[in-house]
Image 1 (cartoon, helix red, strand yellow):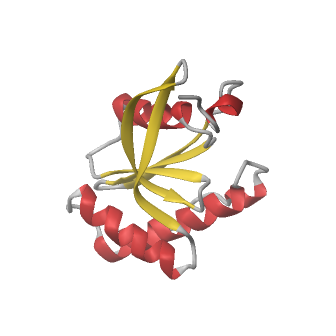
Image 2 (cartoon, rainbow, N blue to C red):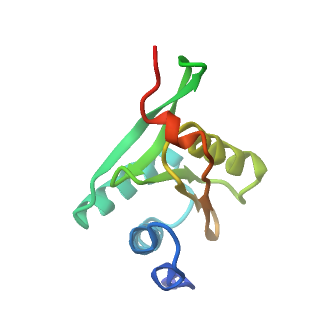
Length: 146
């Protein structure tokens, strides 16, 4: 099997959390090269967590994301992985990424104070998309009132 590597070096692009996302992408390709495609998302999520922790990164699996409206919790979601309390990872094992996968991650970014998310697909061809989402509401999300 041909080893696949990332095409860009995010740390040089001046992006938020560039060094961290660059390391996450390296690990993504390590996991993909070792497992290939065809497994369930849960297999990739667990393998990805193990590989990230081997790089001494703090990882929360199925991190709780609460959605607040007028100071009230109106729903909870589970993000696949949260790395270093900074980057949300959404794991897919689909033939290709589509707009519904992107929308899910954008909702997570909108609902939290996190600004960076990576959508990772362990499909027939490893693909990823990086998302940055910032808005004035993020300042208020840190301490919702009950």
